[in-house]
Length: 525
Picture 1 (cartoon, one colour):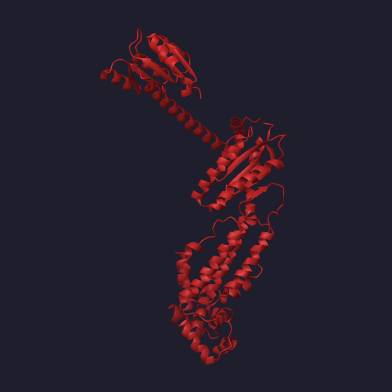
Picture 2: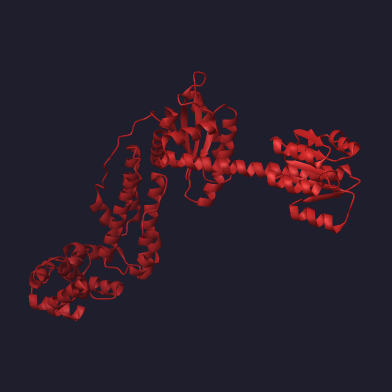
């Protein structure tokens, strides 16, 4: 930056001594002028910008204090050093009231004067740096608003880009969008700084390349011309990303991934950025720490995917067979990788379906799972925002493990496979005429031993458990259908309507009709 200094003193020897005797350029001063009095000095100040004013107090025509006052009206941010042979408090007081920060007594000590000037120069350089950074951030924010949401007009966007890079309308750029492979804000902030440093260094090595901070990404725009091939730039990007990620892995920190667009005109940059954002979704099946160029592989849009063995998974849940469940889930997620699924909504939808299968299956076992579900509700409430298919697979498998293990531990019954199998059988045959003889034969146990084992582990008899299960199903039908109570009793396994009503009232405290009426009242209120 250009810093201009003006020396004012009516004593020629002092004035020339300060002007010629100090190596001002070494101190960061680009231009030094001098004036014999305040009047002449004020003319110079009015004619051109003066950053630092060094002035004597006592001079003919206009003293230094008056000059300082008038100079401040011309240029408010001027830095002023007063030189005086008088140490009277009144002079110092007046100088302070004007805004003079430095008041030096004659005879002037060169070191003292130069230290003051060096301090002012550093302060000015810092102010310029801060303002430059502030202006740059404001420019980037305006550019980001257009790139992501087109919240400004194209003419303003083009003007901002050209002021930032010096590029012309017809120039082409290749957009590189970088994003940290983490959802942790602190880790993301630290990584962004390292990415910025690496790519600002790269931009400085190539005329007209530039870097822009976006809310979630770093955008590096490489100017493309006949002397620079796309393949060459991509290789350079890969080297930089690899270097950043190597350090990250050594320090066990998150990596960064990049997407690279085709060459585009400046006016086409919003579309290029949008393409890059979608390319980064390929991390779902490619993994993290990757560079994804546009056009290298095509991925079918709107892929459909469904879980084709829900019934098998349900059976494994009822039997608490976690390893078999994990194997089934793994096959589905591997298939999504092979299909190159890049839709986060689709993968989260699969996780949601698997989560619902788990909860329905657990409730079908008839075991007391509510406390376990409540304990893990924060983990279960919603499918988290993750980056890769592998991470989603790990999340849903962990959820299955936590719930299945938690239910088994919470019951403190060490429920045997025999009783788990029996409970699962009841959940699918409760509407039939189910007897203890039939169930004991199903689990290959004697009737007496099965009855003893069931009550020991479930804390209630087989008959009571079956009735409770049937009444729970009846309540669901009373809530969701308009079927008559007698018909519902038949559907859940009670062949005698009167017996159904008696059992229902014993367990629920009211008849089926009263239950439906009360529930209807609740819904209306």
